Structures are given as C-alpha cells and as structure tokens.
Image (cartoon, rainbow, N blue to C red):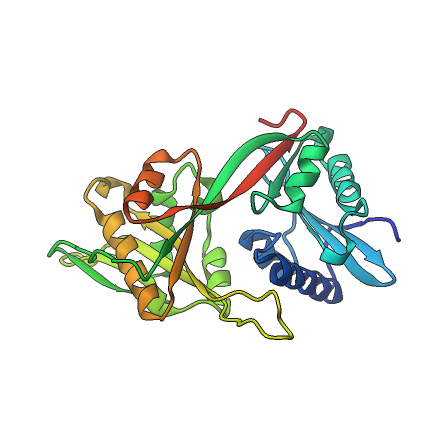
Length: 312
C-alpha cells in the first residue's frame, strides 16, 4: 500500500473518489462516516483551513480522513472513512496516527458516528478519552401525533428563497448563540444546503408574527433518500425524515413555539408518506431531550467525540 497522502486542496478527481468512498460506506453501514458539514465542504473542494488524508491501494482510494483546524478554542477535529473490505488491516490506526502527527501538539478530537462505529473502536484502542455524545433520537410517524397549535398572532408558512435568507441567518445566529456549529452559519452555508438535492421548500417551515411579519422561528426538515433494497443495493435503507433544525427567537422561549414548530414539521414529514422520523441532540441538553421524549422520541444511537492530548 502507498503511504498516507496529506493535501490542503483536492483535485476534482480526488473529490469524486472521496465522495464515492463515503457513499459506499454509507450504503454498507447504514450511516455516513462523515458529518454533513464536512461532506458539503468536501463536495465543493474543501475549506481553506482543512487538511485531507488519502490512502490508496493500486490506485483505488480505500481510506479518507478530514482534519478541521479552524476551532482555535476546542482544537482540531477529525473524521475518518475506511472502505469496508479494507478494515481490520491496521488502516484506521495508521490514519489516526497521521492525524495526531499533523495536529498541533498532538491534540485531536475524533468523531465516531454511531455507538458501534469502527472509528470509535479505533479511538478507544488508541487510548482516546470520551469527550462528548450526540444522541440520535427516533419516533414513529405511524403513532398518534398531536396537532401543532399556534396562537392567533402567529402565521405558519414556508421559507421564501431570496426573501427570507438574511433574516433567517440572523435568527439562526440568535437562536443558537453559544453553539458555534449551528450559530455560525453564513449565507453561504445556507445556500450550500439549499443547493443540495434533498432541499425542499415545503419542508422548510417558518413562523412569523401576523402583524409585523417578523420571523419568530423555523423548522427545517430533511428527508434522507428513498433507496429501496435491491440485488444491486443489498444494504440500502428506507427513507427517513429528520427534524433537521428547529430554532426560535430567544426572547420568545417558554411560549411553546418550539414544540408547535416541531409538531408542524413532523406532520409535514408524515404527509410525505414517511413512517419514521429522527433528530440529533447533544446528550448534555437535558431540557431538549425531555421535550423530544414528551413528543414520543427515544434514543436510537449515539455519535461520540473522542479526545487525544490536552484538548479541553
């Protein structure tokens, strides 16, 4: 096998190879080894401050990793993808060691998507410590679903591209102040997601003040694929709807607007013919977990962040 290549900017052929590898792993494992944020940047050539790690065997890309060095407070973070047929050959350890070597002072955070993921197994075997957990929760859309109740002063409508963009970015920043992964989204981040094949205007709900027209909150839903199991895709999975992002103006907390928006989005997903919904929530956010449990969600799986070195 060739040594691990480390590049700051990918060529289009390398992008295509990495995307194909991630798609293969997602189909095999039932979940992506790479977060949406990293995957979107990858498809558009990567970000200016990221590093890409590539491992080839006979000109075939068999492993890919991304190192994000933009967080100067928490430290660099990484995600790994290894082709299923090349696992248990020491590739994970080799890639992680290359990541640790490239990270300043050897400080590294590593995401493992799924509680039983191979990335988590590699991290624990190499002495990484547990740093954070992100729950995936699910709910059947076949079970009874309460109505979404809004006050008479609130109008529920769909997002209007080109009109709502700036106001949505500003509201998102207020709603997720202190949560950089979500609150730091820019117009470019919004537009990048709107350009994705899964984007659907009917699934992007907005609550606005009836009198002033001010945006009060939103629920952006997402539908994950509709691939059915066939002889060519034996590991495919049925479509599932996601509570992608729910945000409410912080000055309106406690009025039940978040609950109403969540329910409105679930009703939309059910109307699309879906039978299952999911969402992600930080394991430390007990108030949000309590709300989602009250709406019928339960824990399904866990993404875990592991830490190496003195990152805090």
